[in-house]
Image (cartoon, rainbow, N blue to C red; front, top):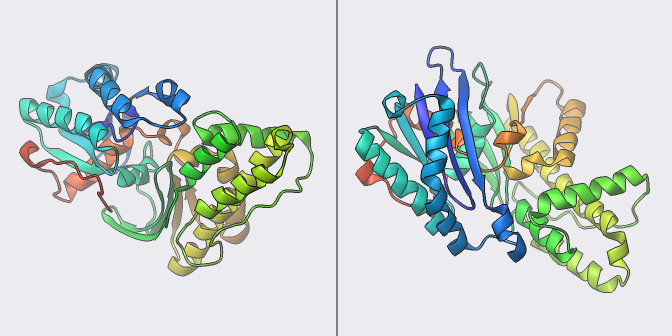
Length: 343
């Protein structure tokens, strides 16, 4: 089965064609096209919804056409459409949804509205030749979301931990802005932190690890405040940027990894997955691998390829396939925006 996925929940306009082997359960990404708006929003230090929506309108049809062309398919070869219906920026979501609705109507194809977080969960299964071992613990970390999910089978999700205030990705972005680093903040802080590691120096800075030993929920607002106060008190902080980036990143990573270990102890999964934009962070990947190897060597760790960590449409296509298998496809007339779409 070939699925066309469309993603426009924030500032990436994306389309992808994924082919699923319905006999063996494997899948192959035939195309994965992403038009990024980072350069447009960079000077503002964050996404401006109105600008994002305009860019989606301009880019979405060319991106879809390119995805079909690269996959060497035409509308007759597409069996199913999947589109992100939420959560996200409402004006951005509408661009993708209305385009997908129109295509489904004209092509007479079934369509599935996909939860963006579910898409990130399925990103770890892309390009896999066989099905994973269930159950799974999944840490999904991005600019707008930080969730721990217990997955019993393909369509059985339970959110067991979530952010009480700010997501880890937002903490990276806001922290980078305080330190006059580039946007997006995650890669900028990661690079600065790596410079400190390479220097071989030891850090005298220590930031709090919010809620690290208290349940499975997350909180990063206090960490951001701690960074702000430190910078205000330190008149020479600009000369210690790499050290601040290192210590700040260590605090975020320690909390994320600790929560995964707590969830493993409670839920006894067979597989652990890391997903979302922040899953591209090298320190997070390294730390999670190390801790699992030390404490749970029998567990399988799935981490998406870097091309599937940020918002993309391949993950939406694969999530749509399994939702369709669970009889969740709809007539195009019934597809609607769900800004607060929960798992």
